[in-house]
Image (cartoon, rainbow, N blue to C red; front, top):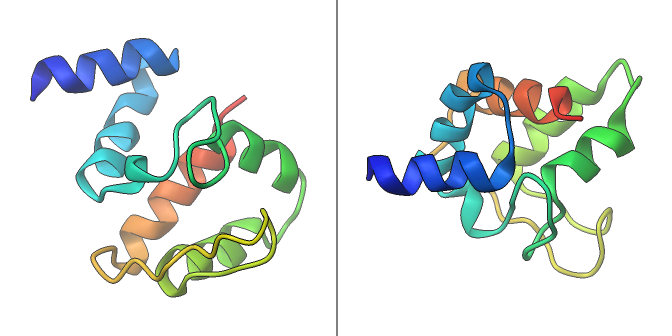
Length: 101
């Protein structure tokens, strides 16, 4: 498991402080559909950060989307609700995603 997480961090080229949030994203299966720097099923996290940069309500809006799901913003494939993620975890993940450059 450590080797897999290390490989994910190295491949994503994120900084060390972001590792804990990458680990949370990994543990909640977010990386099944997303990656830090490339589109998978859903958008790259860096693209999300770019799209929502400077929007005051971005954390609240995206936290709700993580928990309840959403559709139409990034194309025809909907994002399902993530019932395994509580609000505090969703907010932490969204804050991390929005911090990516």
